[in-house]
Image (cartoon, rainbow, N blue to C red; front, side, top):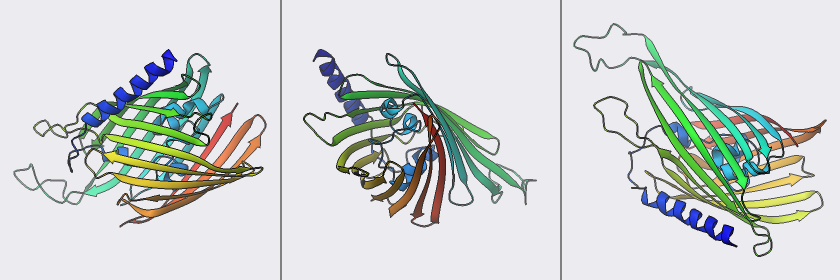
Length: 318
């Protein structure tokens, strides 16, 4: 009882701290690539899976969910994004022991493509680069830990480092994510609650004389409802409310149907204006020796830039 009370105090403190850190002002965040969905299932569910993620990408999406991993989990994926940009990701997680929990590492690489020199700002004369191009990109790494602290509470922390480059300029930042889930089947049968606070850390300056700006601070609240489970059929619903520092709050909902724990169908809905309201995807999981392999695909139509597809492959051992 004492341990549960201390955890409740910790959870309340995190929520209060996260809420008071927000200013809710548009155009005040840097490193916008941190907002992008990572993972095929994450995209298919319109980023509504912080209470259900159960693989090594949980280290990024909700580190408290890492406790679902039995031994090892390894996966990788790729997404073509807007304006010829693309990003790839890879993750690995390992259960260290019942007393320590699960440790994971997630690495993301963003390629912004090529840009044309179009305006000679900062030069007295026209730049010699006329007609040439320059490139940009970013790399972000996340080291996470997650553990079940009591019968009903799981908690997780993630330490992140990101560096972004544009031509000869580079900026970096270190930041922290926290997450927890609560599940009490005795009193809340079929329900699971989740919360994450993301991107709390250092400020970023693109130039020495520019104003320092924060990362896209984010709070997410989640409810999962295990709606139907009978023999080979399983249907879950999820609901999220998400608040970015510089954007109005938006809500999302998602459904996951699985047949025989082998075939998965995903659908998501969001009020976030970046994406279309509806997304979808499918997954296939099969056993290979002592490991479970899975392949997932997601599709989402962005509001202004057409459809985007994400592929992902993963292997989990127990």
